[in-house]
Image (cartoon, rainbow, N blue to C red; front, top):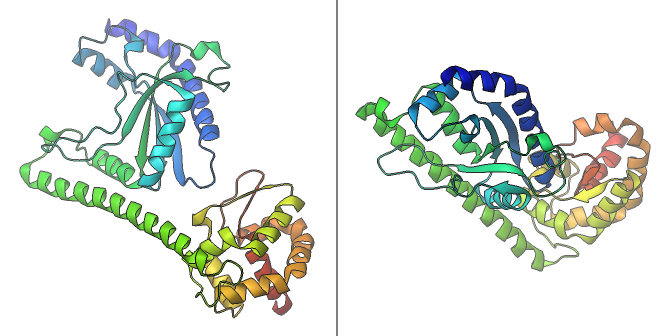
Length: 329
């Protein structure tokens, strides 16, 4: 049986590679959302030796397709709060084997580490790279969804060969408990911190949508301003239209570098930024038109995340900086 399974797997490897590639392509389409901070979507095929060991370890495996993780896909995102959205998209777009899917079952108290979500999928519900190809219809894959910190735990513990709770001494086990607890706590604290940041941005808005009065210049206030300011939205949309792009907002695209740009202009409040955008609106659009031929050069200094055919909200603030800065360059 061992030899026959190995032979079957070797003959099918190219098909599994194509299946994995199609699944990754589908996931990239499904999860293409500007406000998601996905760090990686990668794929792997099970090592032939590991496959044979799995067959030998459990009598329930009779044929190759009984192994549900021959193809493994890993999705790593920044924040814990983004995982429910990713999971909804997977559940909506793919056929899920609920019997074999592990939706974040808690780790036992006697074990170290903390869990990530594992889906077993077979095919897509809608027209896609998978559904357009009948040769993938009987293939199964495992999709793991993790945060960056969960990924760090998995990679590091794997590198130091702590794959089994039984292989760890009591002394080292205590250290691993502490590390995993700290990582889990950090994930939760980042979640609450981000949640608090969004809440504080919403509280900023009622203070004066049109002039923002004397609100200080900081990243949170800039994010709220970009989201709610009428003049910023008008200018952003004009630039997006001129470049035939869609407009998107990503909170994380308003960075310290944008903050430095505003501060270098000598603007001390969100109100002053608002007035400057109104006063310089013509120059902002003219600057974009003049510099459009050297777009790539400008984008090297522009920290927003750009997808194909999209412009970030707040791009008018960058061109305000360029339009004024160019006079002194």
